[in-house]
Image (cartoon, rainbow, N blue to C red; front, side, top):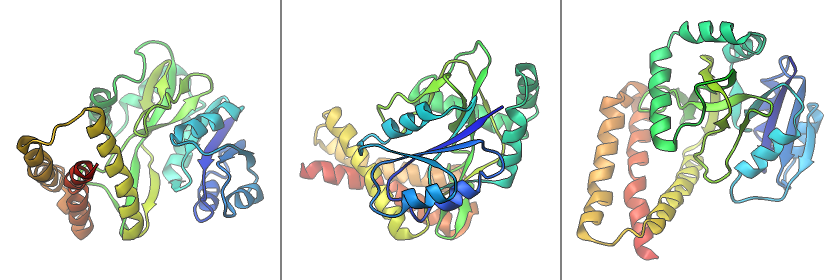
Length: 285
């Protein structure tokens, strides 16, 4: 069973090396499609055995991710971001699951310790994004849970886990629609879950978190523009008061963000602020 690991990169010199090292021993091929990085991303990737290709920068980064998928030759493909690391548990699990037949995968899915949590998360994603798979055919893809790094620790509460993303796919059985930054893979077949975690080092500093958070605020502004939201007192109250308070309470109490310590409180607070910040940006347009 040949496994390809694929990346889309842009100025990831500080991340790509450790990510590639985390898949050594399980992959037969590493593909990196780089959007003309101005740092040493390509040099680092090549030094670790990756095949590197160039691609112009796209506003929708998933276009470059899909290019990397298309260039791979493995029967199975693991799509990663440069700031992600494959945990030891996930590395062992991937090696096992890609050798199983469909009946064995079905039995494995029913034995997952967190099956109820994963099923609930699948339903939430389907309600948000629409169904991404079929109920028929063979297993063609797998969600992978992520643990997100924030100010010195990996969060597990406050709605940050399992943060499931479809990353392990069968060649020719899944693709990215390339319409939205939040989109999931569309899969021609059934989708299961793996239980080992991807370690996501998106926010090594508070500065990097604010930068990334600002990007998602701009996406909310685009949604407000697309929906032609009027500048009424109702909407002002909704985005300035109701939404942030509801989000803060839900992530901190209902989803137990307090159990992540002060990092969980800070994460909940600043993630709730994206609603009023987006509305204020929208008001300035």
